Image (cartoon, rainbow, N blue to C red; front, side, top):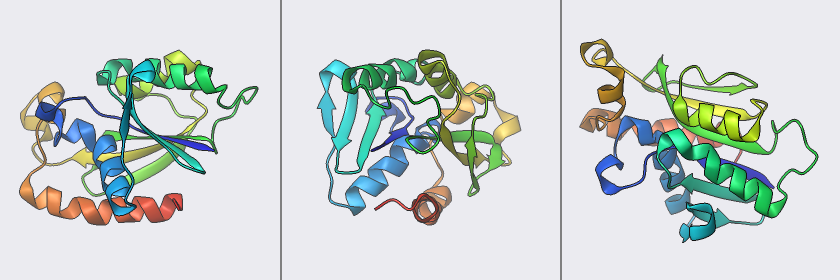
Amino acid sequence: MKLIVGLGNPGDIYKNNRHNIGFLFLDYFVKKNNLKFKFDKKFNSEIIKDLDYFFVKPQAFMNNSGFSIKKIFDYYNFLADVLDFQDNLIVIHDELDLDFGNFKISYNSGSAGHNGVKSIIDYLDTKKFTRVRIGISNENRNKISTDRFVLNNFSDSEKNKLLNIFQSIEKKLALY
C-alpha cells in the first residue's frame, strides 16, 4: 500500500494558496476518481483508504504535518521494519526553487527549508521517502517575503495551468 500525502494548511482561508498545492493535487485526483475524503479525528487528517492507496491531507498546520503521518504509521504498523520508504511514502508539496509549472520527483533529500517536509523527516526520523516538489515560484517571488508569497492565492492564469501540471504528475506517478 502506498501512502500519498498532500501538504497544505487547513481552512478555507488557505484553500487556494500556493502553499496548499499538495492539497489541491489530491483534491483534483479524488474528484477525478469519484472518491471522497473523510475526516479522521484520531489522525487529525482527511483520509481515503483505497485498495492500493492511502490518501492523506493532514489537518494540522504545515509545520506539524509529520505528527499526523507518524500517528498513521504507528496505528497501522505502516511499513513496519522498512527503513526505505521510497516506494511506499510519497509527499506532494510546493517548491519555491522551481518555476511555476515545473515539478521534480526526488528521493532521500533534505527539507530544503520546507517546514512541512522537515516535520515529516523529524517525526519519522528519516528522509528516505519520495517527494513530488511542485514549482510555485514566479517573477513576483522576490517582491514580497517568502511567508507572504506562499500564502498568496494562485492567479487566474496559474489556476488554468494547474490541471495540466496535475495530469503530468499523475501520469508520472502512475496512480491507478
